[in-house]
Image 1 (spheres, one colour):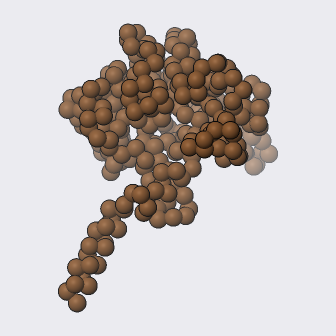
Image 2 (spheres, one colour):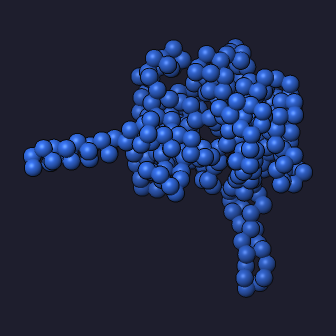
Image 3 (cartoon, rainbow, N blue to C red):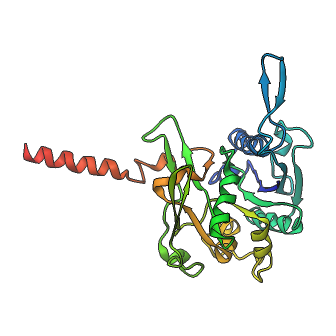
Length: 302
């Protein structure tokens, strides 16, 4: 199988600091990008080995799941960290542009379209997202085999930390239904179920299809690219970043995510703890609220 990954990447140390790409210290962003890129080749590429201690040799491994992986990183002008990433010269392809940084995701769309007919999967992910699941594409293929290419399965984004109130949280919960109402019909086939490895998995049509990424098979990519709105650079879904990642696929497919009870079936890590650190501060913890209420009741009785 041939897989193409496109990644928009931008870094400006003179920026406002609002996003990770606009902070003075490049270290965190450099680690995020390096981790993102390394995982793609390590998990899905052909060159994986097992150390055979008895023969003192490294022998091929995962031949049944190895793929040809190409990575294209889209940047604008000189605002990037690629020269600081310790990767081999042939690890990726660099597509430099002069577009506004917030529109780099649309440049990735143009690259994907230019490669139609060459790959089995066409992928987009922001430069701070990290995959950890070697069976990620096996799951996607299983999902579309059983439900059809009109349905698109999106991963749940999460953050992790050894510190703080929680160690893991999924960060793309439901939006106000009005935000996506004009782009999708949430009542059309609202739920799908499937059994894999003797486990029943539930998938929900989601009020928040955004994951900062998408992974389309060849048929889906061709279908999307044929739409009159493809690459129209419409930024009406929340903002430019969210629109580039999500608006087009939301208009073209019925978008699903694994339900909360099965959230980890398909997931992708958002590097850092930007959202996770909000829990217990700006975002209340439901379980703790319930505990506090029960504690108050008990204290009142006493």
